[in-house]
Length: 265
View 1 (spheres, rainbow, N blue to C red):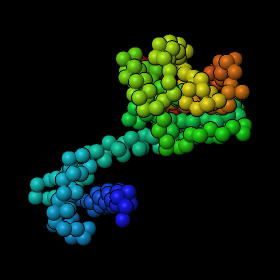
View 2 (spheres, helix red, strand yellow):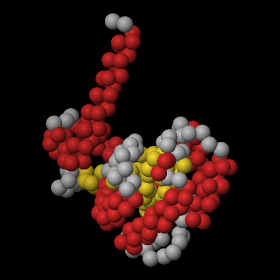
View 3 (cartoon, rainbow, N blue to C red):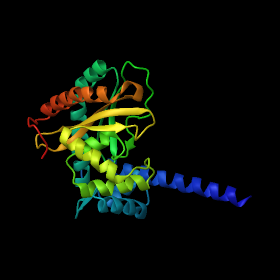
View 4 (cartoon, one colour):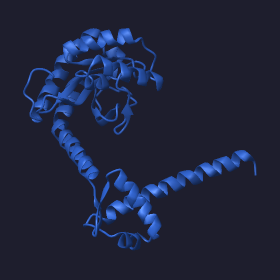
């Protein structure tokens, strides 16, 4: 058998092994949902050897998905509470924002996105198509660079220039379209003053967008929305006019989340 075939087969085996380990880890978490479970009961319940169950449970304790109570066993950990809180907040935000997103898409006739910050990327939670037949490659659940998307830049409006530079360098190194930081920085400073951001065909050829942040009761940025369309429909004049509609929508959604201020923190 050629060496290349051996390598491909080994890669598939490693991938399958990793998936199996992940699924077993999830099984361990689900096995303790009803309360503390001893190691012996955990192994028996899942049909695993004691050593395998211990290895999986120990890894989950280290990552705080489980905790261990002496004489009782393993139970759900604090990390799951954190994730549950974030999931609930995102779901609540999406429910509150949905009518506003749909109204903006209908009024503008263009595609509206909603996204949040996720590990120094913009995570897209919603995409509402407009009436125009414009193909935009974004998908719900995808994560995009912060410094080349309008939505991402809107999420960064309260950040410091030092953090901007770090993110810009990271995005450039990972394949974002080449840009001069001095030009990007000058635009960002203008966006901060205006309270909204633009994507000037930086993330996708011939696609422009207007974006603005959404704030919660603390005044902090918790999400952003954008209106995107083909460059032929997004002249400088139209983007400026559209900014007022985008800001009115983000203000309305922010009000739903308890924010009634006029600026960032």
